[in-house]
Length: 331
Image (cartoon, rainbow, N blue to C red; front, side, top):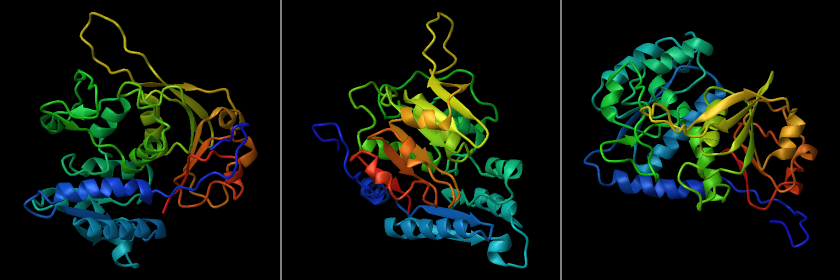
């Protein structure tokens, strides 16, 4: 925290476990009311160390929560003599058709690019717990937060959005639209430490904040930038070859039947990374490289730094610059 003179001391390192415990308790309470243990199938089709670590972490967490987690290994994960991804599509289809399976996770990347995107669409939207199916991506980018489960049966997204909710509770007949796990976790962390203003209306809690998200991956960076902008933040989405600015488009006042929610729009930015960081109240970095470091001297005094890469994207001196609110580190 800043002192009375406005100077900053050592920033606080806040691990995500402190925040996650609340959600663990909530999940345990819900599961205790169910007649049988929920079954989650994880499909590991790659020999990548990071994917194997994530699968083992998932299993550990599920065991502690009472979720029946089954890890199915195919391809190089099952036998190093096989190719990466061998049998993964068949494993997804089998899990889709198994009535005892409630949820499916697939550990990406496997093939990369369009081939992985195709596999994400093979997973049934009724069993997709990661929000990677097109139906959920469409809702995320259009800022549609709730859906009628019957609409998942259609292959075409609705052109008419339901009336917006005024609180974080599904209106009657709807459920929450699934969001990607890591971007949602970052939002929950920022809510926990007060970056979101609880006095603002639902859906505008990040209004007035400027946030840089470094790495525009389709799994984490781009959906996170969209989520934050849809909540009212000004977001700089930084990638290796460009910087984009995400801001929320206001609701259009028109007598025509409303087709779209107020949602983020994307424009090219003329700012450099250094200029973005100097403006940012929050900096999120998700660069999968041990060599990449955000320059501490470029950071705004008192900002919050969020590290969600497996590698440390911030220098050892970052806590001399950030606020006492929090800095996160992924485990």
